[in-house]
Image 1 (cartoon, rainbow over the protein chains, first blue to last red):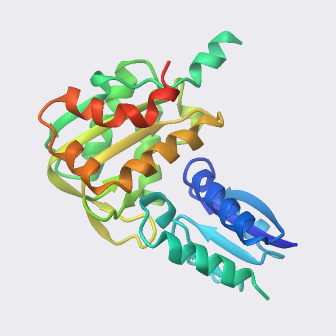
Image 2 (cartoon, one colour; image 1 turned 90 degrees about the vertical axis):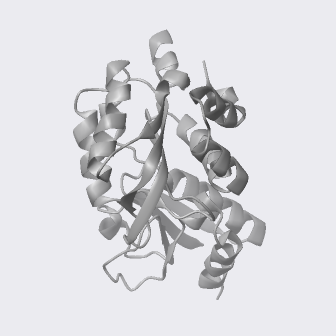
Length: 92
Length: 162
């Protein structure tokens, strides 16, 4: 079971859309996961045992966990590339 | 109960569209567009400040394949009624880009007043469909009337409207 955290500024709007796309991506890839949606400021409390962080914006701190930007899911820019990066980050 | 239900229904019409906005900064623009919500009673008076503050902390500029867009929004505690406003600028204003925080010329603003319903996912999906459509963005940017802008957006959000 992979633990994925999706975070944006308020944990309400952007992360909801990104989370939805991440779920789709992982379902299609057949990866078993648990997804948590949070805010960037709460991220630090959730991150300890995570396998991947997907955020709307660049994360300044290095949590020692792979982090990706999911903003392309909103604009369609490099959507395929982001999906591939998510899958590759969670493949052993 | 009934009132709660209506609160989550999206309000959007031609009066929520502003064309040819002249603003010298993103802050000025955000204040001007927030006022549209306040005048209609859709938000608390704290909404304007919340939008400005949130934009500073977590910028919402988005680079698309064509025109720069921003999707400012605030925490649902400042919102009374789910609603959307669209602002088209006569000259681009600089926002920070969501992912990189780099400066980005923005010409179209979709400002969201979202309640804590599950509906905002559908609204964002609809918006994201518009953002991905180069021609649609161009039609919105260069529309001559509010009616044209409204007709461009309507098909995407029809099911959310009251």
